Length: 360
Image (cartoon, rainbow, N blue to C red; front, side):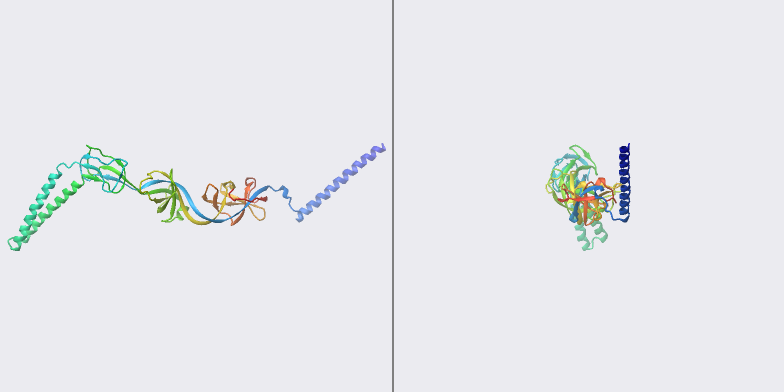
């Protein structure tokens, strides 16, 4: 009985000492935390991996896709009426300025030409005689003037029929590709009928749409790199920047002129267009560091000097197979490259720095 009492007393004493010591330890810890003397337990912070990034000079560019267009396309219209008797022009062939596309029947035009020549010759003789008689005062000035008027009228008629005969031959207005021939032998055509379509492919235009921000950084004469589908990159020149944006897309038309002497590049070919925008300060990173904030804005999370996570909204200024260039970050920043999705802005985190290529 006495032995059991001693054991129970001992157990109770040990329990009392343990409870009391715990209270004092808890009070001591609370005092340390209240006074700020106890350092936060770093083991409780989320660990993230960071990489040091420094902004560098970068030749900014805009890459977009456009399509090729002929510098000009003309519908060759008939200027005199008649029946088509020959069509030497073949659709798809390259024509030079003045090459014959089609011919219209002469009909009675040759006879009218001969008649006009004869009338001019008759009135020329009559006018010459009137001049001689006028000098001898056998003809009045009124009669001389009438003879001159008859001669000029005859000459005008001759010029008219000459021009009409010339128009029976339909010719290419400039060097280009005969994109289509609309008429055929036997067709009767009236004035204004489309006979063919000629497209000028040298130079050829590469047309694209850029944003307002990109348009503000472009100027006429800028060098652009053009890569048509299935072809090697070539150098072109910006020849047109629209001052009126599209109401639906809020974009601006840009045209790049590219030499195409042999017409190798066809119209309507999809082409990559790289427009240079000058040198800027930017960070070169891997796309994996990009994240979104609560508002859906694209940005990057960094760890500041106080180990606090900060979200920076960024703008991608260039995209390459090796990585992306972006602005919106400080000159030097510790980018969170691993674990950025597990921390939020304003939260403390433990950063573990890693080294290597910034865009890896």
